[in-house]
Length: 238
Image 1 (spheres, rainbow, N blue to C red):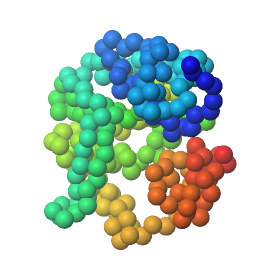
Image 2 (image 1 turned 90 degrees about the vertical axis):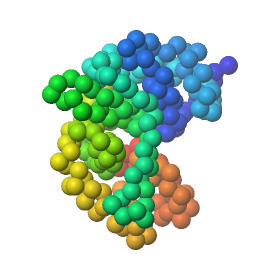
Image 3 (image 1 turned 45 degrees about the vertical axis):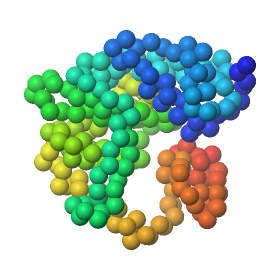
């Protein structure tokens, strides 16, 4: 039986992603409460969602299903979910790899963008009054570079990287990149990686979940307490 209880923002995001991963873009169906609970069970999340949480998640999926972005994915020539990628930083064979996965990778054949690739990244962040474009620019600019390079290195002539905040799927935050941008993107990523490659790991002055999630120093070696590293955004105390 489902029981009530708070769920962390990270687990809420995992559950929402699991529901969207199974959404048929051409015939989008809103998940039932049983489907939401089944998704939680597949992801090993406890406690199972209660009625209020299941309704909230279903409403978010319904909102995305009615968006133009979902309709655009339905029109795409092909779509792939959880598309994995790996590429080196720079051109040296010994360079470290950037690895990751893209929520949705779609190919669009509409002229004049015959080679255009659409990258969609779902975001479950609570916007707290900010616009999707603001949050994407402030928190996900490096991710945009990585996703654009992954597509361009795979042969795309152009790529649009879209961060879709499920609270406002009608306002996706997207940027276009062309093959001619590749060298600039490579240099930008190399600059961002330089400190890591030199094994320099300064503590961030603005800890929050998106920056700190997954850091092995969190809650131990890190000088910031957990209530700061796990807050939802840098401008909120808790």
